[in-house]
Length: 140
Image (cartoon, rainbow, N blue to C red; front, top):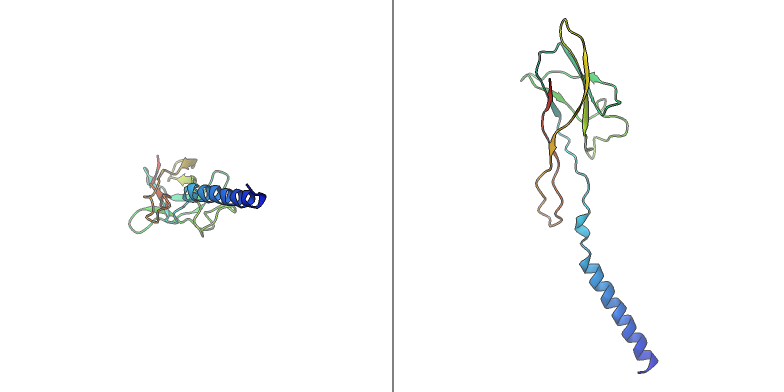
């Protein structure tokens, strides 16, 4: 064979292998962590006189107001988020610190894991899960 023909064949072979590798690598397997900006609900077993909360275990709890329907909701926004967390795009929050004061009793200060279930996969073909769905945090 002529040297020129060998070089052309080598270039075609390299391009063909590169093309196969390019299409064989599934780029959709890298999925971002998708948070959910919905407030986190606290299910408090007692009737507290005061509730404070924040996201994380080394954070500074802030007052939480009880909703008109009786629920305790913590918005995922400052001042409840720590400095390293972002409200936009939503962070994936994993822990909540809750301080509960009941009339005539000692104050309770605890850190709880936030239960969550992964969202349904999106339909774009990327096979990435949808946003996380947070479940209520049970506070004894």
